[in-house]
Image (cartoon, rainbow, N blue to C red; front, top):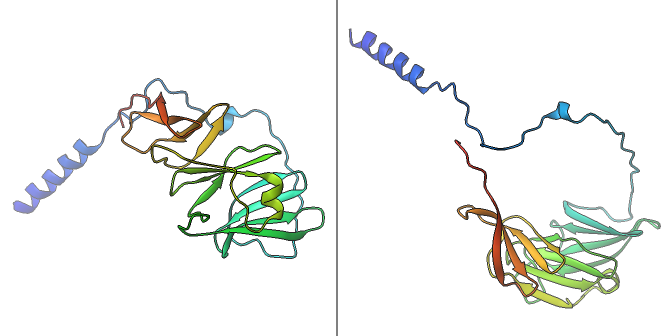
Length: 194
């Protein structure tokens, strides 16, 4: 009798746990693979350099110059010439020293300024592109410590820096001025039944 009651209780619990209402974000726009009507073919060329690229986690190109972030080597940044297929420079050690970085990623940059964001320290570094390409010990032209810790990325747009906020904050992005001071947050998370 106890076994039948136990099975009946388990069956009722199983039915009660089934929910026909799927959890979803409210007022959200959803899309699927079939919503993309145009198909494009991509063509690529394999580049083989005179030095192996090891565990590259990010890259940026300036004309024929490729700069990679390779966490598996003593120096984090490696510079390659895509025309000659040669490794031409390496710089910045991984660590906590004054010129070191812990977990860098490239930000939007231009022909004169290379921006790098160190996720671990929430610091933005700016370098002259030519100095970074040719100098094994480049010095940043500007170093900006952001007032709040940023979660996964940061980008500079005009006179503001935007960075992902950590969970627990009501908005998705912090907004900083160019000196690293927090001036606000933007983009509310959508209401959710999740």
